[in-house]
Length: 278
Image 1 (tube, one colour):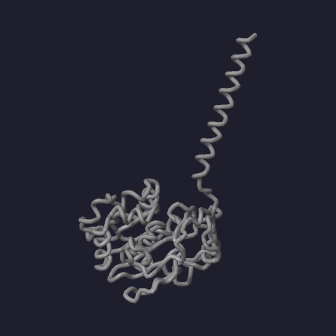
Image 2: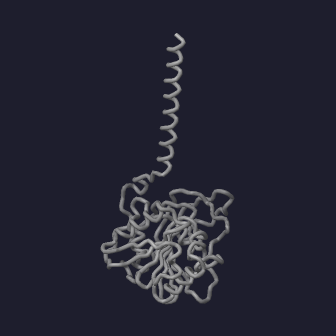
Image 3: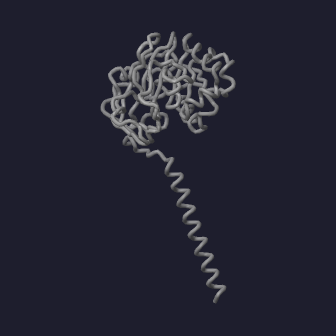
């Protein structure tokens, strides 16, 4: 009898352990799942009407998680004849960036990306853009472009509204501006975009850089962890600007893996590469 009771106890314990393990793993997976119907299974941004072969260098190092690099790279590769080259952190100081049409920095940590490429790397990127190169920054890459950080590139006439950046993660409402329709198409109304602690920006006071143009704006807000409330609605979700002869395109949220917005970033990349109304 004791043997049977012991067996039953062990089987029950194993069952419960397996159940909770499966539940934990399922929760872990589900936390990363992006709802495919977040935008009603609709294509919000159409593919670019015009394209051209382009070469893009993307940062690969501390401050840029592998998944983020892959998401942005895959999105860019949807452009016919586009190639994406991963450039390691230590290479940014010496690599000849003129062989590329655009340099890209994906999500993660802007300050860590800046530290990874170092002062020489940041200067190399600045001079490349000043001479006519294109820049695309997503989330962390958008922070990196701003002008109010000592570690930043200072290639966009923008600053963040607060030093508190941990606003949280959510699917927020966004809307394209009239200026943005020239780049993204005549999209009406609001749509959802995946947000994850991206910068909330405002105009900076640089006199040596033109003002940026707002491409789309947030129409809803998340403000966790003591971040300021009431600053996000109508602030830029995407923006474009000039730096010397070059072009800068930034995205605070993550359209690259938001269902329905997969073609938003390719349009921004093509614009940064010198193509108007792609």
